[in-house]
Structure formats: C-alpha cells, structure tokens
Amino acid sequence: MALTPAAIAGLTTGSIGFAITLYKTSLDVYTVFATASSLGEDVQVLEAQFLIQETLFRRWGEGLGLSKGSIDDVDERLKEGDGEGSLFQAVILALSSVKKVLSNVEDLRKLYGVEVRDERTVGNQMLLELQSMSLIENELVRADYDRREEEAVKMQKRVGIMKKLKWIIKDKEKFEKLLERLTKLNDGLYSLISPLEASILAKAVAGELLKTVELKWLEVLKEAARATSNAKGVANLAGLRHRAIQIMNFPNKVPDMELPDRSKGLIMPSTRFYERRTLGTYQPKGDMSQKQPVLVEWKAVDASVSGTSMKRFNDNLNQLAYFLNGGNRPEYLRSLPCIGVTKPITQSAEMIRYGLVYSLAERRLETKELPMLSTMLESNENEPDLGDKFCIAQILVQSVHELHLANWLHKAISSDNIIIVLRQDKIGKASHFSSNSVFLAGYESSRPGRLRDPTEPSGGTTRSAYTHPDYDPGQVKYRRWFDIYSLGVVLLEIGLWQRAAASIRPGRNPSAIRDLLVESCDELGPAMGRIYRDAVRACLTLDFGVDLDGITAEVDESNAGNAEELMIMEAKDDQMNSDLTTSFYWRVVQPLRKLFA
Image (cartoon, rainbow, N blue to C red; front, top):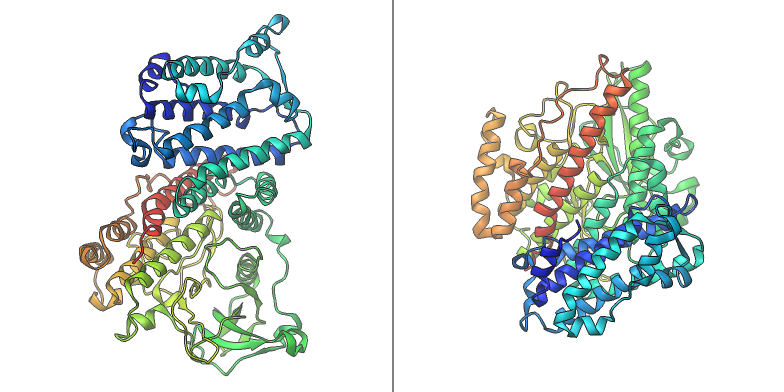
C-alpha cells in the first residue's frame, strides 16, 4: 500500500519512521516487477526467481516489524541508540541499496537488461518525467534529516509512474545479474538477524509461495528455487507438493512401486497378523553389497474385496509409496524413505496384507525392537531432558507443517506412530538423542488432502485419545485440522510425559475427552513453559482464527459430476486449508522453534 504524503511526513520525522518509510518504498518498487504481467512470455523461471526475492524481502521486513507502519511494532533492536545504532545504520544502508537498484531506470536498462516502454502517453511523457527525476545519494539521505521527507515524496511519485509503464526483460543474462544482486542484498538483510530468526522467516516464505495448485507453476517455482542460492528449501517443498498434486491429477501416471521379483530379497522373521510393523533386511536382486535394514508397515484388506474396491486399495497404496519415495526431501519432513510395496501376502482365509517398505540404511538400532515414543512414555526410566522434549516437539510440528504444505494428510498421528531411532557409537553403545533420531511413521491410511480425493477410515490411532470428536469415520471426511488436533494430543503427552489414554476412562464421551485434554494443558505451564502450553492448547482447541465450518458439503455422487460446483467448493477449501496452515505455522511451529534448554 502506497504511503500518503501525510503519512510520509509523520514517519520521516524520526529515525525509526524513516526506516519504515524506506522499507515500504523499497517494497513498492519490488512490487512493480513482481506483479508485472508484461516481463515476457519466455522468462517464467526468471520471474519466479524475482518473486522469491521479493517474498524474502517482504518477510524480512515483517520479521522486524517494519510492515505494519507503526513505530511501536518495530523490533526493539532497531531502536537502540535512539534509533541511530549500528543495526539501524546497516538496515538503512541495505534498504537504500535495494531501492536504488530497482528504481534506477538507466541501470535497469544498461546493466540488467530491462526495457521500459510508455504506452499510455503521447511522446513518452511519463517515461521522460521518470528519467528526469534524480535519485538522492544514499549517504546524503541517511545523514540529512531534512532530505528524508523530500526523498520519500519523490520516490512515491516515481513508483506511481513506474507502475503505469510496461517492463520487459530483453536480455536474460543481464537480468540474471540483477537477480544475483538482489540475492546478495537479501542475504545481507538476513545476516542482520539471528540464524534462527532467518530460518523461521525463510520457511514462512516457502509456505507463502506454495499456495498454488497449478502443476506448471510449481514446476517453474521448483526450477527457479533450485537455481537460487537462498531458496533451496523452497525447491524441495515445491517438488514434494508437485508430486502430491501430480498424484491427485494424474494417478494413472504413478509408476509401479511393488518391489522387483515379487519382493524377492526382502527377508523378515515370521510375524503375527496383528503386528503393524516388522524389522527386516532387503537386498535388491540378491546383491549383498546393497543389503540394508528395513522397516515394513503392514496394511490389511479383507480377502473378499475385489474389483473396483481392490483396485482403489492397490492404487492408493502405490501412490502413497511413490509420494514417500522421492529424493531431495524437504529438510524438516521426518519420514523414512519408502523404497516400495511388498507383494500381497495371504495371512488367513479372511485377510490379505501388503507392506510399505522403508529404508533404515545408516540407522543402527539400539535393540532389535523398533523404539516408539509410546514405549518411552510408558517407561519411567526413559524420560528425556527438557531440551530433548523441545527437540522432539519441534521435529513433529515441522513435519506436519511440511506434510500439509504438500497438501497431504497423515490421518494417524499418535505416539504409537513416532519412531525414536537412537544411533550407536563406534564401540556399540547407544549415543545421545539427536534431531536425526525422530521419525513420523504410520502412513498406512495417509492420502492427498483435497475434497475430491477418495478416502477411507483413518487407522492406527486409539479413537478415544487422538481423534477429534467431530471426526466420524465413514460419515465425516477427514480434514487437515484433525491432524493438528492429534498432534496436539502428542505434544501434551510429551510435555507431561505420560500417555493421554492413561487419564481417560474407557467409554468416555469424545467431547468430554477433548475437554479433559484441554484442561490438562494447565499442567504444561510449570513443566514446559507458557509458550509450549499455549501452542498445545491452540492445537487442541483449533484456535487459529480460521472458519473451519466454511466447507461442510461432501463430494459425493450428487455433486461430483458438477465440475463448476466442485471447482468452487475446492477453491474455498484450498483457501481455508492455506489459511489454517499459515496460522498453524505462526501459532505453533514458529514459537516452538524458539524453545531450547
């Protein structure tokens, strides 16, 4: 939003106000190019790279409180030394550089390959006026209070003209130099804050950029991010979201994920039908050099199921294995890499089992049994330090956030589905807990998260403990916020270090169970602190400022054939899910990431 002359006069009278004005003006200049539809038809990747830098710049300003326009909201560190401290000076210099790079028409043309055209006025009057406006040198503006308001007013007029002109990338190689320059400037801005703050803001950028469901744009964004030094996390998340949407839109193109030769090379001990997981080894094509430890998670189906229902079951399982198989995984999605699906195994006359096979390569287990969080919670001897509890919670909330960014639902979040793999040192003794120890498992019922996607009852959780009272399998479609609620129960368990079910009387009403869990949050304050307590309570109460009742209709035979109605419903649902995921990030992920002990 452009600043009015009155607002400019009010802000530029002080140092902090000047910083706000300079940030907003620089963002306005960024927006001229980020929102331009005329940069060219064959430069989409370059446009995406520019959008990444614009979003990074905007998020940085929001992180320091410069975006709200109020001096009271600005980060206190900028106010040190009466607003003229070293951080303030560095910020002003950096912002001035951004403004100059993007508003100097002559440099844009000569150095950066951007051509500007005036298609609105006779005789190029607007363009001539723009070229006649001289830029005051950064040092003069920084040092001369009287010239700050003058420069701010000129820049507002300059931006107004720039928005009316047509901008075209004429030289791609030169424009890449502009991107390199902006990348360095953003790197400089982010270096002025702590690495943790920088990481949190950068992750928010990924969430903002990945709201689209357009496959073509996701492919462009992925390519652009891979070519951008400060956006590697965006590239991996874009790749995962692209894969998820590709599965939704083109399920027939998903490759066959069954292990070769009908699972030959998979060696497991005999297992009982009710066991959900089995540890074993796998060596493809009998090659001992490639032998690796694996985990198999079983999924059963009634042997009488056939035809369309069996095909859907097989397709869903195959798609899930493909989704969890991809390389270049997002940094914080802590799921084991799935290497394939086993052949169907007849367990009895009534049931058939399939297995999702996960690699445990380079992960040595302390015992021959897979250590689960639920097992640790039940043992009084294994309670971790406070710092380790924070670490487990951070890993889980970030994993769920990245899963939801990919538009995928877990459907079975519980302490029974959280693996704690303790590495061993060289002499065979278990090492200390690390951030690489935690994995979110139990994906057997996982699926894409759009309205039209086929669903089945969630599995692997104890309904009375982890399931939101509004979820009724077979009657109510599973939604994203049910995952968040289940996560809240697990976070409560971690904080109090006991199973949620331990305090729940069998047969209790689901709503009463939720009320009891929310009430238990009060105990988290003394044990884990206010920030942790409030994050858990937000998950359990779904207090995210989003209307979760906005989409109540189900996609069934009555409306599945109405393409227009379905598109409207999905657009509303996509927006609601996007708003929920954004709010979840700032209400839960961001505050928990700042906790340590």
